[in-house]
Length: 272
Image (cartoon, rainbow, N blue to C red; front, top):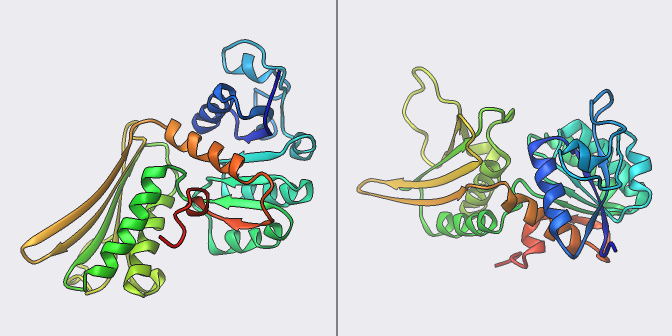
């Protein structure tokens, strides 16, 4: 017997999609009711469980998001920016809780979510883990406490299949540091230094991206001054931390008023 909200997973065949499906299936508080893949994908028309190499689940993989969303209460979406914007429009029509873990979204993509938030609950975050969201708050507090004698550098490492840089988490941390300093990240962001760049600009926040192997996610925020350094660090060794956070967000959103939220809202850390 299924209990709790029915959840649709987009990008079902991907590493994150399959982790989400396993996490929801193992939970007594929700169940997978739909799975979406892009047109032409070999999983289309197949039972989701069998496509994943296990027993049948009674869920057929489809490319028709509107059909999949109709009986659902939530959708968890770790795909690509253009796809996420389209899913948001459909989720708003169906009044679903839309949990967005997609990274690499432009300002225009994010702005396009605004009208959808008038009709549905949207929970969007560059990272769904509890630890990273605590790190974000710590970064803001430390940045506020230290003056520009401390240079801020953000170093992030991910697997060699990641297509965007800096990571969504790195940008979250950069925004937190900039907010702590009372400045706009756009005005102080330094990325991809190469060649004769000149000396470091005081007050700027640097970003560095490492890509290799199967690294799940590592983020360091370095505060460096003459004679001392402070490093705040988070290491994720299992994608399950993101899946558990996304499921928590989908459950938290049930019955909430329409609007745009983030994981700080879900975790009760907003304003702390």
